[in-house]
Image (cartoon, rainbow, N blue to C red):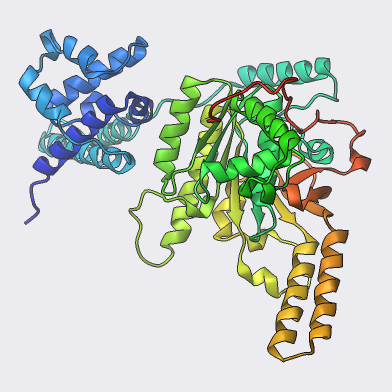
Length: 495
């Protein structure tokens, strides 16, 4: 005997309504799927319809505004309303939306089934007429809330022509998308474009975070805003890296506070500049795709200059949390990557997601990454518009030298032999203070696949164009931020 789902659904509805009133930014996401008729409880239906009316008028959805409109046909007592808003809201609303929609469809199907049962008993109706009504009824139920997304050929052609004309008038030296800060990368990608999902993959210690900060600095230099979701390290650690890359002070010296007066003055000027940029950092270590979607939408509505978002990194995110068993993680990654791509299109901004690579590539002679090295690669490879890999040969050279030194000590080699190996490593590191790194373009939906050589200054965790690339077409502006002429004092740097 099936249990009565009504109390559970009413509780779920109440929680969702409370969540809307707690954070009205979620309403657009909910209204894309649900309508007032999807709610079983009459009061919940009325409150939802009032929220929809407020939203369409651009009026904030707050308990005060909602309560003031719960009158006449929409009457809900203040006591009942107070009981609803006292319900604890939830952050991950996707599961609740799905449950309410599912229950609504089942109620409609049950009602429709009873109607069909009555009609089949009517001898005046032909079977083909009943079948036609069944098809129409099923279509009506399945298409609820699904607005048409078709655009006519004329509209699409006109919009495309306008885009081409606009770009022709600007000239081919102007980027279509955001300036990456690297001339050759701009050449192959035409910049990071609206609606694109870009994936940057690398093994640990290659400098993924440093490279993404270089992209962010370039975006900020263009006068646009950027958001970073840092699941791996606190915001302060990101800021250490950004300060080092923008200055002549090494990361190590910044971390321990080793600066002379001139360096302190330089640091103050840089901090002043960064503090005035539209840069936003969320360093929550536990983040679901639903939470990220809600946070980024809310930020974009508060500051429309935000034109670029970074997730560091993809595999640390959570999906809806409803999947279990074999293949669950692959399905979860698929949900996350699909969600990021959809969000990029909805907000019309490029989103950069950093990704770890499989350890198995370390066993190859050629350790340059390939698409198959992406962890849970199927969905990521499919959803991404651009996939970049970062590769630094010296990481493996230095690792091999360290292994030789450790082995020599373990085997009890003479001190002079160990010192010789240590000296060799020291010389190699000095030779490669500024080393060549490769940005491998493994997928480019709208352009060529190639590789871009850049230089990496390890002490300052700074990626930049090689000198030979700085006079080419699509030349970006200086990747260092514009700094104030005088070291204006500031108390605290907060982004």
